[in-house]
Each structure stands twice: as C-alpha cells, then as structure tokens.
Length: 111
Length: 116
Image 1 (spheres, rainbow over the protein chains, first blue to last red):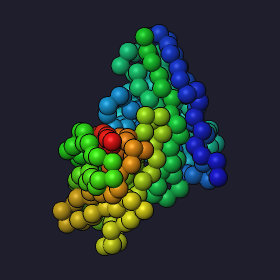
Image 2: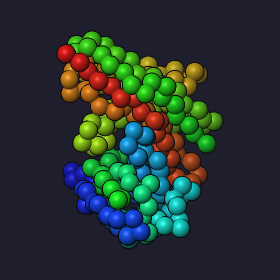
Image 3: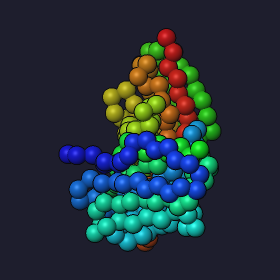
Image 4: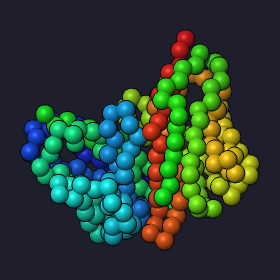
C-alpha cells in the first residue's frame, strides 16, 4: 500500500513570497489533515477535510493560508504572502477510520 | 474541546533499560482512541501503539506497552529494553469522532534520548 505523498520535501522562500504544498493521501482515505509543526512543538491542525468538504479550519490563518482538496483526493496548501513565523514543517495525514498516516512533511524556511 | 498534556519535555534512558512517558488528556467524550506516535529526526510521524477507549486491556506492541487509566484520563507509554533507535520525539494523540467528523489532537511531545 502506497503511503501519503508530499512534495516538495524542502522549500526556502523570502518573506512576502508565495508557496504551495501538495499532498496525495492514501487511496480511499476520506479524511485529510494539514498540520503545522514549528520546531520543538507538537503538530497544530490547520485544516481538516472530509472528502472534499472542510470539517475544521478554525486555526487556519485565512488572510494568508488557503487549502483545497480536489475531487476529494489530492490537496494543496498555499501561503500568500509568507511571513518569517511560517517557517515550520507542514505535515499532511490521511485516515479512513481512527489511525492517521502521515507523509514525510515539507520543511519550509522563510528568510 | 479535547486537550492532551505531556508534562515531560525531555527524558533520557540507558540502553536496555525501561522508560515510561506520561500523557494525560481531557475530554467529555466516552468513545475515543489514543495513540503514541514517534517522530525521529527525519520528521516522519510513525505510529507506535494505539488504544481503544472501550477496551480495558492495555495495548502491547513488542517492547512498547501502555498503561491506560480511563477514569484518571491517563495514557502512559512504557518502552522496555530501550534501543538507540528509540531516540526520537514521542507524541501522545487523542482521536474522537464527533458530529463534525474525526478530530485528532496532539500533545506537545517528549524528547527521548537513549544513551549508551
């Protein structure tokens, strides 16, 4: 079974630039999560999809972050414009029932 | 709202010894799942062990076992015969299914270092 795929693995951008991350969940998994993990902290949920609908985006900074899940499968997370404090690892996870499977993450550095 | 608390930011253990990581949670739900995830320096989040709240028996996976105390809302992880490869960040996580869908909440993590 293929795991959760994320790209790119690493990204360095200047502040005020835009960036996009891509996630391909495990086939058949209805739930998709995007987490932000700042160094030394636990993952913080940014947005959660159930199929192609948003279940929870209460912690998503909507003035600069956006996300979509096309046809209930792949998802993209965008930041525009980026700030220094957005430097973090962005984790995508998917689940069918209770257990979540994670991708390898995208490490974003904003300089 | 669900909260997960890990009160030990860092721990160390000698190789082959046993270590216990603590986790407490708060919820008003009755049916839920608890997990321990391991995150090595590669940042890949790996599931270590899971526990269903309706099961009284503590989960065990090889050298990893949990002590689940539902009334006390406590969920500790015991690692026996610690190995150097166990060095990682360990996160306790809580999962519940609500009317709004699945909710997966993480604690702040415990950095475990296994030493020679």
